Image (cartoon, rainbow, N blue to C red; front, top):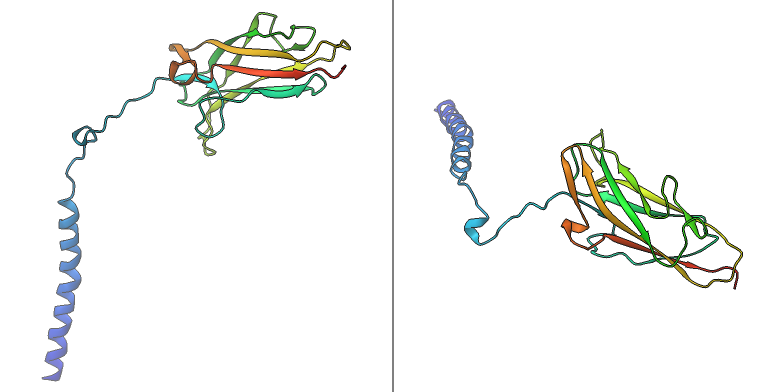
Amino acid sequence: MFQCGLKINNIKKMKKTIYLPLILVAILASCTEEYSLEDNGITVEELPGYVAFSAPGTGISINPVETSEDAGTVSLNVEIPTSSPSDVTVNYSFGGSAVYGVDYTVEGASNAGGQVVILKSTEINLDGLPDNADIDVQLLTDGVVDGLKTIEVTLVDASNSEGDIAVGRAGTDLLKTAVINIADIDE
């Protein structure tokens, strides 16, 4: 009788072992109801692709870069946070009181502006950073007392193999212009 009691207990344990996972699967399978954000008053809108100057965190503006004419190079980072299926060519223009060729230069650019190419990443982006490229502004010392000067670099347009891409955060004026303030060292 003692052995029979053991066998009955073992059968009960086996039933629990078999039925418990089956019950859990049935419960989980019943939880497959589709969930729609729109049904709950939430709408999701995909942002169009765009290029913009990089801003820290989720910032919508960047502070002017404060530097001096003997600082060497100032790098302005341009990014495409939404990624691109191909390289992106970004055209930019110069403005401000600084004079191109006297106060600053940019390799491959002219006094009107230039372009930078954001290469499509060929590797999986594990660092979480979007595809990006730098506009490297080489500051020049001029030996003349001429006070504070500014350079305004404005993104004008961008395109890839599929066509035009908006400039500025989500196609707005946000993060479309970067300003460099250059202090005179000859004062």
